[in-house]
Each structure stands twice: as structure tokens, then as C-alpha cells.
Image 1 (cartoon, helix red, strand yellow):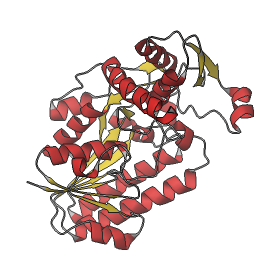
Image 2 (image 1 turned 135 degrees about the vertical axis):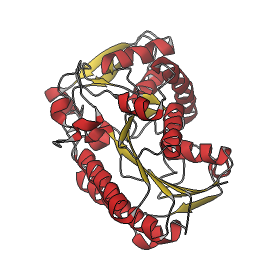
Image 3 (image 1 turned 90 degrees about the horizontal axis):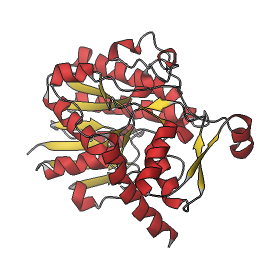
Length: 335
């Protein structure tokens, strides 16, 4: 049994990771600024500490001496409606950077045996993601740096900071760049939800023969990785001798309009798509349409080379599972 601390376990990926760690027989402590909305505490951890990890003194209390593994997933983040509007940039950079600085410092002081840091595909240069059909997200292309959001800049800084602590203080770190992780027990409304959850919620809420909005022209491309695949990839990385950074994502690239069509097909409804962008979007929402880069897709060559593992399930399987869960949430919410 290992002593495991999951920072950010009140969130989507952190909650699933904590549950897996507990199911494997480890002692799990979670620390987060919010409770997990969709998991019962007893199902995912032995201890849940509700605290603000931007407070260095609280991080000092949370991280214990000689802990086996710390998983650092705590961050100020959300979907495109939160990250790409520009309205939350100061909070995103300030809060996440301070959390990561606090965590790295305490992990060295407490002699933590191994640390995982969750970075993001948002670190990749905007100029490599202008062509929706040919994005370039190979790990080695991160520099010269030019992320399209302050969220991406902060993630890139924190990667470098953790690697500096590895060089200077022998911190045994693993770094993964997540590419759009989705699945049940995740935020599905309120502005911080990711694209698959937003699509599936809209489909669940739209009547047959109705219409729902897709932000942007829908030609932008992404890849999306189901949560169970993500957790498997994290565990394999932590058990390896490879520090990263390495992509954790799917190579199944899809346009946003085609993702919407997939969601509609899963629902069995007859629903039409309305693409909203430009001045019409600004007039309705009061900010520019936050579509992000034109194309982004995980390149898993390095992960396969270093760890000998690749994604096993197609996107539609994860979307179908997630639709059933979100549909039940919508039905409960609307009662």
C-alpha cells in the first residue's frame, strides 16, 4: 500500500484518479478548494482536506513526510468559455502558478518519492495549430514557445519549474500534457465544461426537430480522450522511468461540427446545428467567440516509444457512455 496525495481531487480527472488509487489498495488523501460534486468521499479517498492550495501554509500541512506519490492536478481552469475569453487570465496565471510553486517546494522539503504534474496541450505554439487538418503537437515542437492562451503559458512555465526542481533538488517528477479529457462525473454545465460535455448536454436538452448552437464555424479540429484511458496512461507513466513531458491524448482527430453530429446520432434525435460566431456571437454573449486554435490533435509516438502503450477505445464509445450519464444529470436537474 502506498501513501498517495491527489491535489485537485475535487475535480473531474483528480476524482477519477483518486478512486482508481483507492481501488488499487492505496491510502489516498485529497486536497482541493471544493468537494467532489459527483463522487462520494468514501469511494475516492480516506481523507479529504478542503483548503486553498494557494496558501503555502496549508500546502505544508497537506503534503506529508516521505509520501510515496503526489499527483498535482489542482489548477484554475475550465473549458473554452473560461480559458479562451481572456476574462479570467489573471486568476488562471496567478492561482495555478502559486499552487505549483507551493507544491514543488513542499515535495522537496518533505522528500516525496514521486510527483506527477498535469500539464496541457494548450502549451503548444499557436503557429503549429493554424491548419485544422495538419496540427503539429509533437512534444519537441513546444519551443519556440507561443501558446494561444495565458493558461497555456502558465502550464509551460510550471513544466519548466518542475523540471528545474528535478535538476536542482532531485525531485522525481513525471509530466503529462493532457489533450481534452472527458467522461462521466465531470462538469457538464455552468461555463467550465469541456466541449464533449457541452455538446452532449445540448443534445440532451434539445427537443426532437430542434436546433442547438455550436460556437465557431465548427471546422476547427480536436481530439478527445476518455477518462479511463487517461487514468491508465497516468499510472503507466508513473510506474515508468520516463519523466516526460509526454502527450496523453487520442490521435482520433475530429471537427467540432462532426463531434456535434456524433452527439446527435448517439441521442437518436433529429437535431440541426447552428454555427454562431463573429459579430453575431459578440452581440449575443458580449465577448469574442472563444474557439481557440484551428487544429489540435495528440501525437502519441513518444508515449508508445517510451511506454509501449496506446489508446484502445474509439471516441464514440466514450461519447456514448458520457451521454447516458449527462442525460441522467439533465433529467434530474430539470425535475
